[in-house]
Image (cartoon, rainbow, N blue to C red; front, side):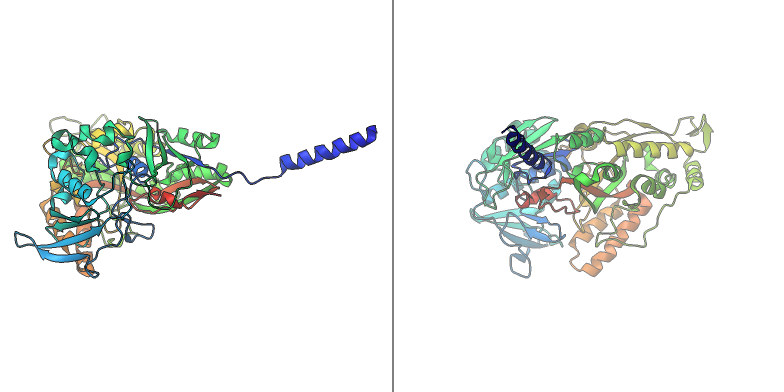
Length: 556
């Protein structure tokens, strides 16, 4: 009897042991925690330009059109992309006798704000009205002012009459719809609108969102909670809860992934390539890792209000002093190519004959001497009045790679007698105030991300210099003003012929290389780190984040 019991116990223990050591399929996850490296300065879709905001809002809203992973323009909120060929767009003459275009968009018939209010053409008209006022603080207010008339023949149809016909005539991807029924009162005084908008005074109001998810909780500087939007008209999203956590220190971001506090790191705003490569060597077997090259331009803006930086010879010397090839090889294993202008070789607009600045410290020293900084005093160049050649560089605090790059730049400039000090700020302050309001005294290092063949008018045209008078609208934070560039940008966007447009793109890149509105560093790739059970995420490589298609995400 005792023997039978022992044998039975042995069998039972063997079964338990097999069950304990045999991998079993985990139950499908119904929640997802995402780590990003920044927290938005605002949740308004049209005020300030931050990828952190764009990434989060993409879960909750849909632009009328967007550039997808295939780099083709397509409808998201609209039902059919209007074109000149299909009659959705029609050439017309403006009241001033100029060539214009009328573009008709049909809003998805089931599109509804999260509070049950339908998304209508009146919301589009309201957004245009607010955006047209320069005091509203919209980042691209000038583009709204080109819309001289809005027709709303019915609740789901809107016709935009634009006072110019350009090759992006049907691209409405940067317009973030504002719910008229919630923000009507806040917009009464445009000068105060950016401080009174519902997007920041009542961010969890369901009426702000009409995408697969809505924001249900915000802990400023820490995290945002997203839950399914019951009025969403598309496929039901897989996750019952998504949390986006902002972890400004990238070392802490990595640690939180390894500890299981977060499930993934968003490539749009997470670890840099060098950090991801090191992470992959140690832990890559546990995660799915994707490196996506894209239209992400890391650069150093040069504030033209600084008299030292107004001299082109100084700007050129600063670039010649840098060994950018060595920097990208040593830090990024060659995965992030050196930039010579703001146009990426992946972009159809790229020109391959643009003058380049190879590492040449002697030429840099000669140019500085020509510019009046020929004498060294304690290793620092001084001018005839004995004033030192001293500059300051700023970037986002906590980003290990940017802080390391800063030190490399600082060391290189020191070798040619330029004294550079480093002062960094949290991303929310850096982008929300310092860059937006042009508060950096000399240099600001960050990245622009764009769509294919995107005319850089908001970053290079003098009409887009943020000022207190225009409530800091525009993205030309360097204060760059060149009449030749202004004319070229105005001409470029109106050129419908692709071949003629390519010649203008080439001219733009040549002016950029000679004038150096910014110091080009390199084109970034995004490093996406996902759990192996996550499916359906498709990086775009352009300015529109993968979260715009969250309804395709799932768990296996």
